[in-house]
Length: 603
Image (cartoon, rainbow, N blue to C red; front, side):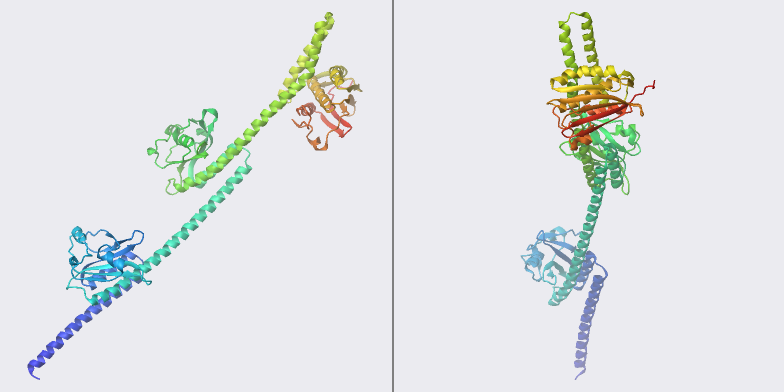
């Protein structure tokens, strides 16, 4: 072999070595890039950071000018640029099937284009917008292990010509790395989402449990309360502590005026604010109580409804407030208001609004219960007044009968002395009626005043017999008055007369078909007490009524009864330091026994 042949072989070998060296360098570079991608995948779960590293390596290894990664937005049926290299690049969105990348996403096939402007799928508008000139393109779908298309990798402008089959193979390997990144990120995001959901579920459960605890505590407060004002104070204190506030108030509508008054107020100026009345519609509380809409204001300078005059007058600096209605939205009964949020942030939020609304619901229930009870009490009072008036009218029958009878006789008499006697009897009965009215009023008010003086019992019971005999006789009731003691006692004579008449009328009502009624006056020398018994032959008192004989309005089924007579009799005995009791037997009759201190010095 000649020298020239040897030199040719050496040159050829050198070229082959140079080519192999270049290819080896390229492969080493690619391996190094793959290692960098691998390290990135294992070092962070930040999807944007990993994908940015992958796309930088894609551009370098593919010897391209720039690359883009499009991800699939299934909800909108679009692709969007998650990573887009180049200056001033903004997010690009295109429909699946639109443009080269959209076609690849729709068909799931790789596209290798030598001249983009010669391909009908290419949209040159993007070049016009960016000023970039696209020549060659290599576009490949990114799939997960289930072959679902996650996105598209697009590489632009091969620097050394066109993209080759080797470039496609290399890009396929790199795309696999991108797919791993996307899958890992999706798994991570799914785990994060599940964790967030679990955390939110736990927080929601804790919130619900806290609300249930709060409702239970408030329910106990409402159930045990006997005074609305004290109850609202406790509920308001609970609201201030739970929500976090420096001061608070409960405002209720006032009668026919519709003005709001402070039923409860706590905080530094709680007592001072109670003197104010707020017209309905004025201020935040007035607006809420009128409209039924809650109001939250964290910047009072911007809150036009805020009534600053009250805050200024009581010198209470107010930063923010939260106010909710009490009662139904259509007809609120008032409002609950908290002032100056405490704690971190010092601003009321939707959670505070929810809590205060919950507490206001319990306050509303307490108010409605109290209003219902008050209406029942009012109805009872009206009923009591009606029955008391009925009792008065019934009690007036006896003196009115006497007055009527004596007036008629007076008109027919010519004897002046007899007329004077009858006139005195009429005047006395008018006095009895006046005393009845005073006594009923005193009984209703619970007064215990007695005006004692010496009462001659023989004369007193003689008058009683004279007044009762005609009425009892009309019904066929035999009246008897027996004086085993005819001395004196220091008593309130008018109250004594009322007591005797009440017990007598009770016996009269119990014997519509006649019978006997005996009043006996005796004296217990050992105890220095006057003992008066009233025995009738009526039907007796049934066992089920015996415990309530002396209670007000306990009529025990008697027609026309008011239930006040024996209650007043008992009060008379007790006011005098005495006592009253009874013995009864069904079918045989009842005997009432009254013992009264004589209060006279023994002669």
